Length: 257
Image (tube, rainbow, N blue to C red; front, side, top):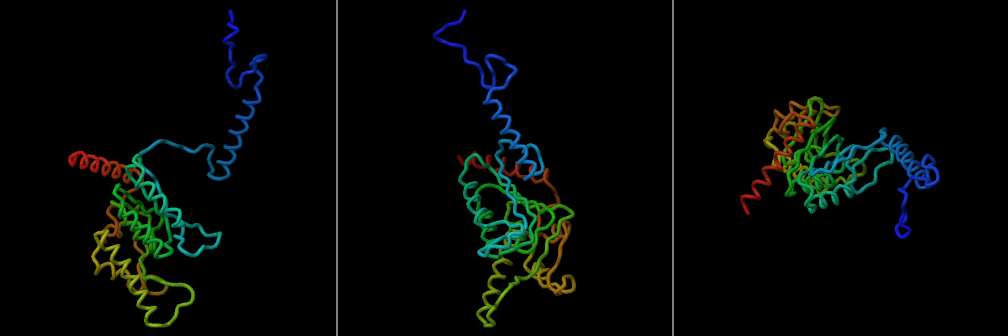
């Protein structure tokens, strides 16, 4: 017997007269799901995006690091004005306990790259970087800015002095500025890795390898042997190391309390 004061409410998507006939609400939901699937296929080449709640934030540094000048639209870029607010949010978010940094970059703007590297290095939360494909030019300081760094065997890192494109005023002060900027890069890499200053400068000014006879292209195992990168490894190694660093940090905080 039905209670008139508490009428039966049909669940969404059920047609009271004929349950086999979808309601307008159901039709809209199905249409929305189809649109989402099509968008995912067009944008990401997948029907669904795997998601999971995690205590680790994954950040990518890909293509060319874009600084104060906007690069052409055909360039794949990492914009520093996008990365820097994310790093602040990671530092402030108590749910995020670590940062996983994926690099495949050709380098780019020196000051923008150094700004990103300095922010990563100054975070209180542990971070692990992986060089995949390439971590060239200003990508080297970004790679070594993490608490611990990995590189896959097939990846390379190009080490060369700072170069400028466009008009340069041929005055002593211009060259002094370039030299001081190069010194900033050198100091950061040496301070945040195990490579000696002498060895770094040897790789920086090595002749005979690149087309302009200056600089060095370093493959994965050599980057480790020189002391630039900590270890050869991929995603699983980086994830395990980051979990280990997070655990150590928690234990250290517990002892202090």
